[in-house]
Picture 1 (cartoon, helix red, strand yellow):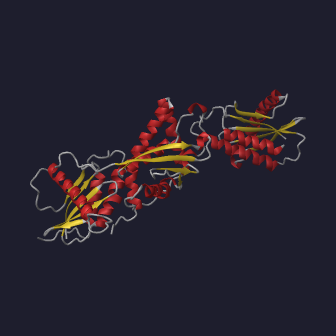
Picture 2: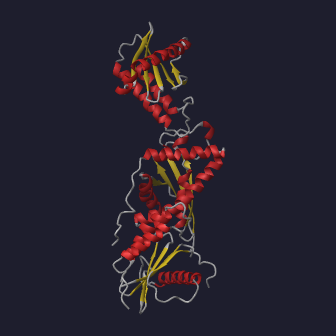
Picture 3: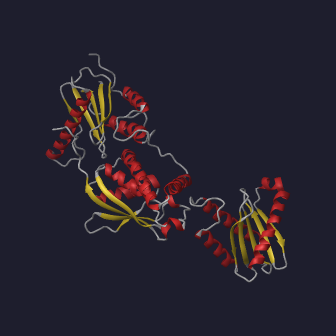
Length: 145
Length: 139
Length: 180
């Protein structure tokens, strides 16, 4: 069970934060491109899911999986989007994402008057608390490959 | 019969004067002003005792043939003076005390008004209406 | 679940008088800085807006309220959850327009104005205009463009304080430029 990386986007697509822990393969494109690609994909996927849903939907897009990893997604009503990539051993990271949003992002970034909105997060406190939290998760430990 | 209420700043100039209109209004102002001397006297006489007891009410300052004058000083040295008709013997000490307490509370409320600068003359509708109701009540 | 459960979300109690006095000091300083009431009103609105765009995140994180489906739901959430959470009061909602796009919030007591008496030389000051900015900023972050304004104010002699909220339009998500 392992955690690969985390993206946080705001409503307009700006990547506010990115961290990686156990990413074994890079995308091969510059980081800017990668963020744009991720956000664009999420945007399209969310609107696709909303449009094509065969039943009434409460939360919309939640996660997708491939043969090697699972992508978990959380979107706040204010448009803040959190994306966590883990391996397949993690079935749901919703609680973790909710905690990152409510107790870390809102408390340490939104409420900090020195963190301008819509700009990448510079707060060292946020970075270190986030890191500590992720490393403390039960599904963090890297599986010996 | 409550005849007059005056509030003095720590520097002894009046912040608020309200009197029942009569021909002798100037005499009120004079009486009240001289009572300030008595207030100062009492404060320095009681001195440490005043601070220890936290007693704000000064009691009867001095009786004249027509009036009784009562005084009250706050911790911030703001003074209140009330002039009462001598013929009114119905007003008891603790009633006077509670009237002063009402004045003090209203004064505190005024201090909380962000538009009030300490040391300004008091122009407050709430304070006016409180004094009005005290004057009408006592008559 | 989370090791730090509740740590960031407990209500930190503060003396409400300190809050009222702080807001009063803010307004009077603005009055001294700007010298005319209209400019002060604009500044209060701007400051409120900046507070609102951040406050909405805290609100969403703490209240776990999902997306509102219509303006009526929004009104309920604002009055019963939002105002209660931040100011400890629950305004009532009245005067719905026939189209359902305007309503009034009636505040019987406004903690911002405890002990305040407006002097005569500030008769066009909208003392609590910060609140309008907060509402506008917060709702903009959840894709609603609204207009909020005071139509009655106890500071000006009215019996209640009334804020009129008008829905202008829904703000659509736009793809960032450069995407196909």
